[in-house]
Amino acid sequence: MKGLKSLLIISMCALTFSLSAQTSITDANLKFNAGVELAATDPMGAVKVFEECVALCVQVGDEAVETKGRAEKQITSIYLNEATNLYNSKNFAAAVVKFEESVKVSEKYGDTESKEKAVEMITTCNLMNGTANLKDKKYAEAVACFDKVIAANENDAKAYFYKGLALKGANDEEGMLAAFNAVIEKDASGKLAGKAKSQIGKHYYNSGVAALKGKKYAEAVPNLEKAIEYLGENAKILTMIATSCKETKEFDKGIEASLKAIELQKGDVNAVAKLNFTLAQIYHAKGDTDLACETYKKAEVGPVAANAKYQREVVLKCK
Image 1: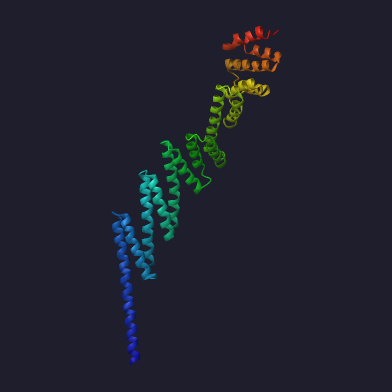
Image 2 (image 1 turned 120 degrees about the vertical axis):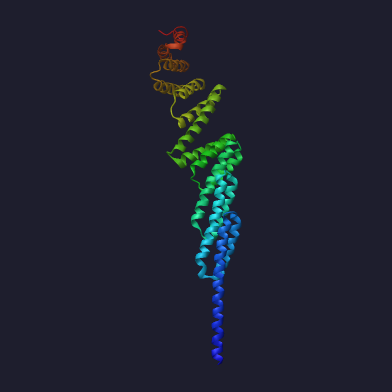
């Protein structure tokens, strides 16, 4: 009799436990549905409901695994969507914060796909925020944004390029050159590398022109040579190098630059005449009268003809 009573008690306990578990699963499903309904009007409020659903599912155990997974996915999706909405409204600074929250939540619930999307969007937001600051001439803020992108991916050539532009605006010559050279290294033969070379070349060109105008010829020459290194050989730059070399008495370098410029200007008679006039001046300064006379003769064309003739006949008394 006692054995029968004990068996009856055990059976009743098992039935009670089963009913309790069934009720908990129902509660979890009801909680999930409530979260879905609330998400349409109050997404972050719905997150709390889904978190309660997850907690109920944990209590239920294996029978609630599917509901738990769906609730967790709802949570990670809401965080990602909220961040995306901020991005779409161009509130990039706020979007970064929300995407960072999305990363943490995705890690918590093991949602690799959502985490990867959030990480990618953080980079995009930092780039967009940086370019907006660059446009507003907030150079320090822009550099900080681009540095975050670089910290996440040290091979991001675009971030280095925009950082170079920001440092250029901030008159940080050393930092600018380092950033643009990093673009050339990371992008190799890509379009950004070409743009970076152009930026560096223009910097050296402007520095060379300023030095030439200030009659700082020794300073002009290396800057103009650097400009050619990044921009390629250019008759105008070569002529300025030749002019500067005449003043610094680097005659051979000046002659070489003049001859290259003449080669590049073939077909433009007046341009070649001007270049020959400069070349003749260098030969004269070097003390090579014969070559000076010969070259002044070649310059007796167009706007410099009269001056070239005067130099040849009166100054040098060429035969």
